[in-house]
Image (cartoon, rainbow over all chains, first blue to last red; front, side, top):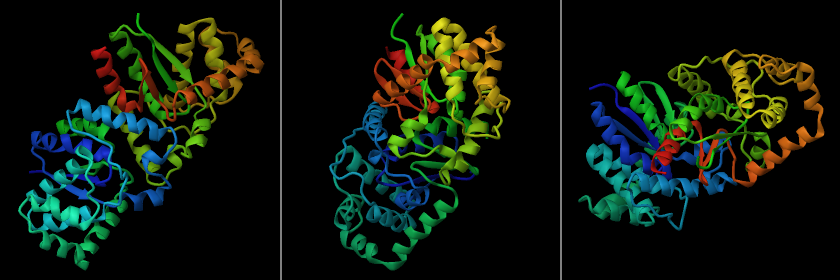
Length: 198
Length: 198
């Protein structure tokens, strides 16, 4: 199997939620694995001087229209959560911790976080909420809560965020395929074209 | 024939140049006209607090890579002009003046401006350069130069830019299809999907 597709995202990004619906099927079709890499996008936005989408005049209005219509096209449940955007520290840390134990479970957890938040409008920003999501995958809540306090788990998210920024990741979702960068859910067609050519 | 597809752009936008390669064929396939609407994007950027793409850290590097590779895929000539971006006042004014006389000639002129600038790296920011481009379409240079001094022509560009902003246009290219807004050259696939459904 060739290089994995690097999939960078922030759990708070609605366009990442939309990308999640397509990325694994696309990768499987081309016999690639996907390396899911949640990060704290706010740190990259600080460096670039960009603001979260919905805080930008005009662009915010557009996004509020564009995301639901794209979700509809992809037949995904979608609601704007009341608390949006949010700092996705807890789910991101839990993801790396879970993935180190079991890669498949890590991805199932990430999907469950996205669906809870953007599909059903449930808050996923607290350790308790994250432990609740993980518990449905058979992970005891106290283990998740303990892991979220672990300094090594905290450091991992920081390391991953720094590494993403060092690779030039400034938005979410962001894909790197054999070194070639693609920014945006609407660039999955280009990712597919590259995979077809590879 | 149904409503025209509204095509908003700034002549200084490389993604608008890429969109130009596809928009007319797409519209023709669906029996729609395209209303080309150049505007001064800088005024919208000021309102949204956004900066020109290439001035944004990281995003600028990405754009410098993304535009040439997309041009290559579309089989379009492309060079980064030395003076980029530029204030496209002269070509925008000339476009509206020419289009009022002859819509087809206006579009041919717009294509010629894009190709001169992004295809061959020629400056198109001065009245003389714009008159030169128009002269190849049979428009005497002195007529173009005179038009560019005309207050009504100047006012027209201002009116069009204000109207675009009032419709929520904050980026280039930007399409409005039967009231539905699409931002970005990479959203032409969505424009196509809407036209197919219409």
